[in-house]
Image (cartoon, rainbow, N blue to C red; front, side):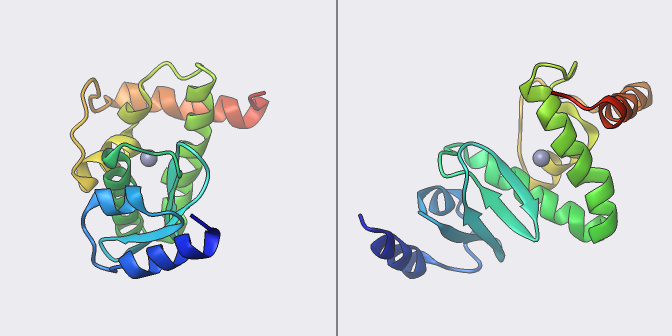
Length: 150
Ligand SMILES: [Zn+2]
């Protein structure tokens, strides 16, 4: 299918209040989920900043729910706090995780765990961190900021 035809199809399927994850997975370039714009770009990952960014190769509906959970966090925290307490640490920890330098499951991180809960994701093998573990995550992020990770 050609680029313009794909765009037309997305436009035809676009429904702002859509709450079906499948519709987002099946879109080519853009969609909507619970009144949140979804831009499909990149490959396997997702993010929330202003709207949902969803990888084109994502096949797990849980990731859409999870990113929507981040939107609810942004609403709850406000933009500045969301950037400082969720977006930046999750970006850093994701890089550590990909490089096998994160000693925890990524989705066990407190803000990721919260996004799962808010978005309605049921995930196995994650548990909420204790305060001591939260401190260890903070130290890990400090280390990353001071030394960088290559
Ligand atoms: Zn997340």
